[in-house]
Length: 126
Image 1 (cartoon, rainbow, N blue to C red):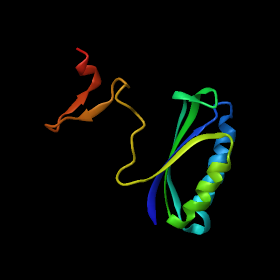
Image 2 (tube, rainbow, N blue to C red):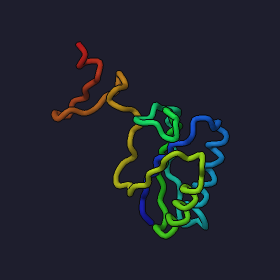
Image 3 (cartoon, helix red, strand yellow):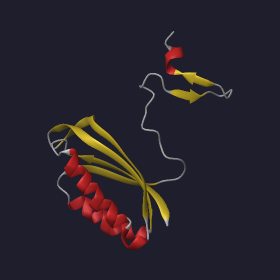
Image 4 (cartoon, one colour):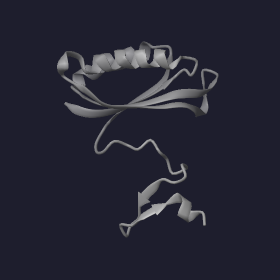
């Protein structure tokens, strides 16, 4: 089994209940027959798109991490491509720790500096 990370961008007109239902169906396919497992699901919510997709300027972002057999990805990707409510998706190999959903633009986020001390974005603004 290998680790993977997938980013989904759903049509923002869908409700959270519909998105959760679709995610459950996708992840059941990935974990099918006990040969895989979903490690984490992070729903980022509605975000502005960098460019319009199908005349829409925003999308509902979800990031999921899972482990599965590479042969299970064929059917998983086919199912994603057939879903009309899924505007974009990207599956990559996951190597390392889960990514943090907070970006540098969020004030108050602490990160380590080269000297091993923690630094805050709020300190840089002064």
